[in-house]
Image (cartoon, rainbow, N blue to C red):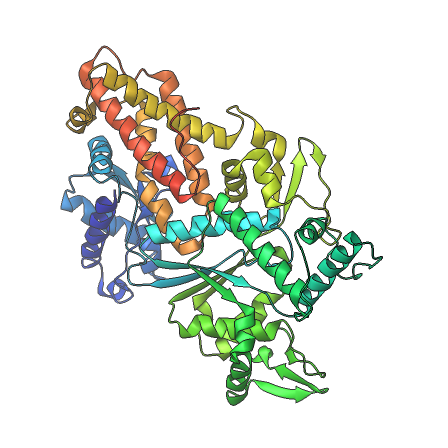
Length: 545
């Protein structure tokens, strides 16, 4: 279908040459041909007429000109062209759609990929949980989203670097050390209280039990021990979740190597800092923030923003074309500050995308589970994986738009039935495999399927399936531009529904050998796209259930 879209785009460009001069003058040379959102709008649509329209030449008139020019080209893959509210809708011949199956089978590794990101480098930072406790379900949702986005962007041609930023310095680490020390001393008979604003979770009791002795010459022992152990546990959980990183960056190194001070000097040279009320302020309002921000307090200590700006300076100097930050729901106010910072450092604001992944509320059926992170009462990502499994957790996290609140039903995620969307998808994939295995036992080979007469696929359910397969490349393109991963999850569920409907209405292996071969070719194409989409979402594809 990609080739068809490109041919349509080229034909539209040629059609523009036949338009009146005043309309041609406004043509940028770019033509967008995208998959239609609804079946009644055909296979593809273009808004070119709307873009070229002028006061004396309404979009409907321009669309009529373009439509006539296209019809005169006698494009062999096109059944008809319709104009609707200024849009041009393209309907392909059935044979053209059917040939898509052969395209998938002859290029299974690359079907759906694109070159939008060719030659472009992306830095994707996500999770970046403070090493002060276990990963929470909020971190799990960020991890699921970030890994899927990285895979999709890679499939779209981008060179993606996954990065994890360790906030392993500052006040929260000192409080962590003090909290662990209190738990250790409590285990050894001392009545040492955990700091009121420290970390009260029971995980620190378990951590304290691992300490055999405390070196007298290491005043920061408890801090280091806690950070090392918690960081190791975080990496183990992420690995089980199918998430790995190319780069780990430590906040400590920015302090030790003087990068924070160097960043402050750069901002000062650029005229972006000033002194007031005994503190050093960043003139962030000059770059779109609602108020200026303190970077250095009156006592000389740094705010959280100062090392974060140094980190983003480090991101910029490495030469990435696009920087993506995936942050938790408590970072909404941080977005304008970071954008102001990168702009002050000379990096175009439009090249940094900050995605806020919203909160997740856990339910067990109708029962809402109450949690308090500060009190240490929460369900960790590890506990969630233990209960529902990594696949269910990832899909439930991904299925909703990242910026939308998510209600996660543990009871549904554990069901071994078609009510559970993850089970539904994996069941569809297993059924596709079993159909191919059964066909092989009946003497049908994959090579025969490649030569099948695809024009025999005439049923309405088959047409719907083929159209859905043809939408896959467009979904990948849209996600690589909008960064909305949930679109692939929605696409995959729709594909599964179309497949189950077809399977229920029509027998694949039947008495007509030619029709059987055509349907088996469709099954093989479905299995290719199914497995690819699930792999991009980081969901496993079992061969039995």
